[in-house]
Image 1: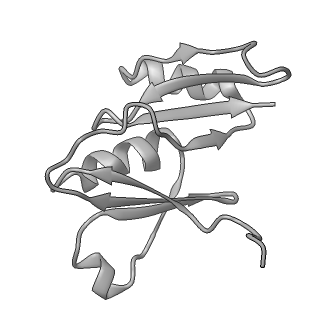
Image 2: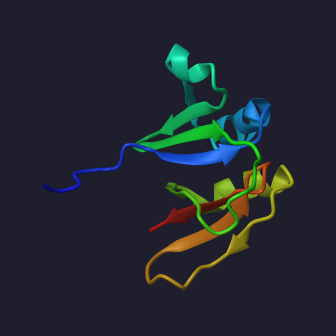
Image 3: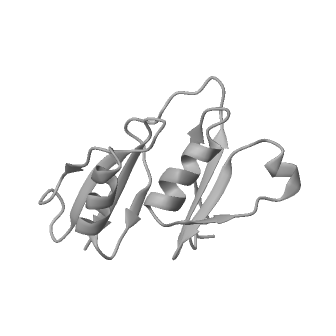
Length: 120
């Protein structure tokens, strides 16, 4: 028996947060929204993909943002992503040098969930 991959990461959002999620993950980060199966769509939330990254956003009440736990997305142009997020009002905190050979920063989605972006 062995784990052979990762299917998705799920992050919580508050009730009614789908449009804000689409703006952040879809518009700003350029992820593609995937259609949820009808039985799951009835629960709210939304799913996004980009390359091999799959993110599920699920409604959770009461909602509390993930301030430490986070998805870490690999990008091909870290500076460009940082510029897009900062222009949209999302502060980015660089953590370069902590992991040899990796440039990265952390930001927060509209709900206060931590998100890491990194480039080798």
